[in-house]
Length: 489
Image 1 (spheres, rainbow, N blue to C red):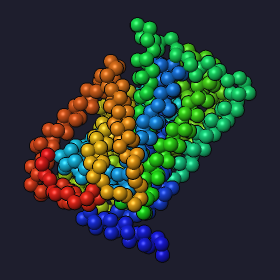
Image 2 (cartoon, helix red, strand yellow):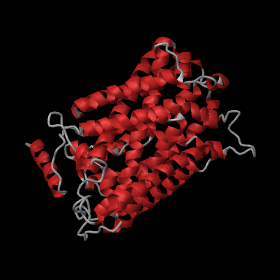
Image 3 (cartoon, rainbow, N blue to C red):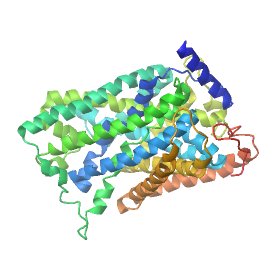
Image 4 (cartoon, rainbow, N blue to C red):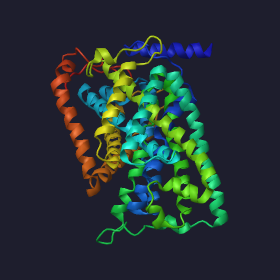
């Protein structure tokens, strides 16, 4: 009886926002948490970037992780309040449109679209070398490309079959990730403590970390790329709000818990992995440092077991990101502010999945794989784009923060203003460290190019229709008090 009442309330929420309930609500708290946790995927982020941290800042670079965790936890708390107020697919697109104006809202949707499309193949690239090494295949670029393409095909098919199957696989992957990461911390930690932990590694900066002027700060700041790339995507739970039961209450809890748990487990893993290093120059010379450290410390059988668990987690990460990207495309198309909206807003009556949107993510992911010049470039772009999206969203939130009515589900109250400005300060700092260092200039160029393309497309294709009220969100008054309709953008 309670469940039916909750589902009625969810359906009424959709009607309030002038949308039909087309997607099937099947996600409860654990599945919503699993979506956010799997998107973050500490396995993916740490396995992909630990080598970069070692070569850039040495093992001491792991101390950037707790700094990024705190910064992103601030963002997650602000997003939690927004998700509790407007539980709709499209997350920042929906929120910024209502907080600011339709033009900035569309731009937030564009940034989210670029991020989600690029991050799917980037995640799958973390999977490819591990698979190649486990099967004894050549680890050259062509082999890795084919593994990534094959992974994209499987992920697309699973997403097309239905969100229930995809989330069930994702739920299982949460267990494998927690078991894998905690298992590595416990087992490797015990072995290392028995043999003698190399605690000096926690302050070791390596031989190439200092700059020409003798400063270590630049190298240390660059190491923050690992945390910035990893601890994002918690908002995927909000993007699947229309498939979540009691979304206003469930999604905020899921997002905050996912960041908190990922930050703690990830840092423990980094500490244990680092103190297990006995020969830093040798570790720096291998292609994949973590599998090498595991095998050297635990033997091939035990390390292979943990690597299989890690593979499942990384695969699920790409799977759920593809689902999230398709829901964003669906949300934009539903309001006719996406390309060929009539095609991409269609939902399969059999599976309740926006199949065409899933296929588009698959095709664009393939193109990103085939034309990407550098994995580091992809990683960098998928770090700075969410930071820009977060800043845009929270800046709009700051503008309206004093006008927001009290929320029944998740309300920051007197903490709203200080937390908002702390989050903004952090995001400005983070964007700076991801774009200003010379090594990241190419990332800044990619991000700036994508933003410029978005501005051009908006003015050419969507601005006039949005201003005239023919396309876009029909009513922006709900959730933020009595506002007058404003199409100026």
